[in-house]
Image 1: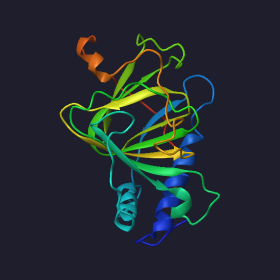
Image 2: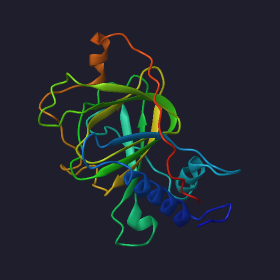
Image 3: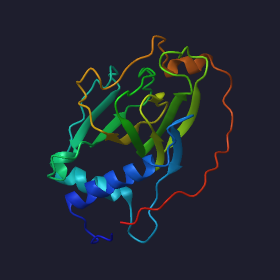
Length: 220
């Protein structure tokens, strides 16, 4: 479906949610439930960032700290049911900001919701583990650079976190479904506490070449 050059608030939110659901369909339910990618417009004047700007203009968010226990991270969420005026919608679109040197958000899981996360601006790192929350002991942590327009899509239960170094980073996190930030079920911590501060004693950084098959394009 093609929309006008200046989409309405409902057009923007509906497109973002459809994009998230379409991406989530590519994530396996067995094995490692994670997919990495990039988001980009495929024609003149097409930008996912513009969709977020349109939402922000119509409904400005006041990011609140601490977020999941970190004073260096703030967040707020758009309620999908209110955006689309449809009480059957259970999804939410969160905007999250990491300040520079935000390394204290521990590894955690979302046991009751899936995630489609896009880096809106800035740069940082995505950390994840193939271990389960019950078995996580910090011995198997993968770190991937997160840059503007990078996308991380994963199913509930993945052990993960984000961090920043010298730069701040803003993320858009589509929560499928949305669980209130103050709900005790919003996130869960493994018994072993791991934060990005552990990287100071980790082996030297290395270069990786991540190759992906072309993904399905969602036309606006």
